[in-house]
Image (cartoon, rainbow, N blue to C red; front, top):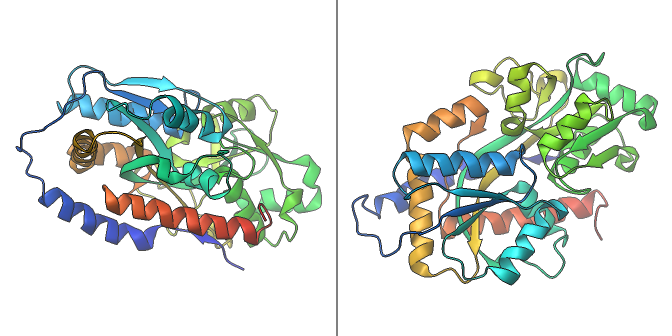
Length: 335
C-alpha cells in the first residue's frame, strides 16, 4: 500500500487563489491596522522548523518594511505545539499583534485530538509560506548509508534502532517514519521505536550524541546540520529531487520506497483577532511570500511552493486535518 501526504495537488490551486487575493489588494492601499509590538510564537524550542518559520518570516517582514521595528520571537515548547495553542486560545485570544508558526505537525495533532479541548476553529488561519518535504537522516559517521539499509536493520532487530523527531508520538515526524516503514514492508509499524523531542534541533542533538540512530524531520530544520556536515541525509520524501542545496540527496522513491511527505508551513492568529488586524497579517505574509527575498530563502532551505491566503488557507488546513485523521485511524494511531 502506498501512503502519500503530498500536497502537490493543492499547490497549484493555492498559487492561483493566492494570486487572485494578492491582485485584489493593491500594495499601496491604506491599512486600517498596524501592529505596535509584533510577535511570533514558535511552539517549540529554538532550532526546529517552527522556530525557523518565525525567525525567517519575521526578519523578512522587517527587511521589507512591512512592520516597524523587530518581530519578537517567543519560544513556547511542549505538547507538540499544544502548550502554545492553549496559551493563545485561553490567554491571548484578542491579541492583534500576535502570529503563531504552524505546520503539518499542527494539523496532525488537531486531527488526533492531541490538544485537549482545542479545535482548529478556535484560531484564525492566516497564510502559508511554502512546504517542507520530509527527510530521514543519520549521523555523519553512521554505517547506514541508505533508507533501505535503515529499514532492513529495523526488520532484523527493531529494538536496535531508535528514531528521533521534533513532534510528539503520533505527530507529523512520527507519521513520516511509519509511512516509510509500511512502504518497506514492515507490517506492524508499532515495532518502530520513535523518540519525541520538543523541536527538530533537540532531536538532532540527541542523534549527534549517539542516543538515537536516526532522525526524521523536514528539509528546512535540517539545513544547518547539513551545512555543518554533522548529519547524512539518506532520503528526501519528495516526488523528485529538490533544487538548490538539497539536490545531491536521493529521494525515497529513487531507492525503491514510494513515499512522499510534504509538510506545509504557515501561521495562525488568535481567534478574536480583529478583521482589520487579520487582513493586515494576511496581506503582509502574502507580501513576504511574493518577495525575491523569500524566494531565495525557499531555494536555500528546500521549501516547495505553497501559496494560500485567508479563507483558502483555512479550507486547506481543514482538509489536511480530515486527511490525517483518516490516515491515523488507518494505521491504528487513533480509534
